[in-house]
Length: 185
Image (tube, rainbow, N blue to C red):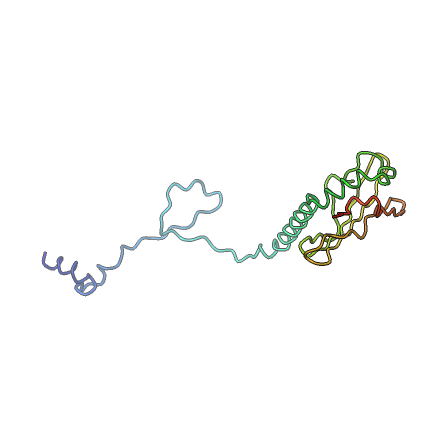
């Protein structure tokens, strides 16, 4: 009894002369379950681990992942452009333009269900240069809009607002007298 009390106080490693008492009981390892070996009824913590396959499948799937992420980024950025106030304003101005209504007809909207807005739209640095396809009841064409802001304190200045029809005819919609983008103070 005194020996057990001393073992608890000092620690079993100093008092114990027989090292075999300190080893855990030996248990045989069971093999890992095989495919189609039936249900596993119990699982022991000291079972054999399955073989680790040294295949690198992720190297083959990494380019596919990069392409999917890149396509998603392009789609998100294009959606951001298509829902911006610049695109909505140019589309509204195109609908109210007599020249555009004469060429395209009524009900002017994007030519595709998911429009692709080409070009740069950087309002922070004062550069907008976009183009996209539009259609009406008569025809369809590619609208181009370019506007710059020379410095931070000035307004945007519209340089190009044109409509190119399918046959290649370019119609300048920007008229100084009827400019819908002109802001007079």
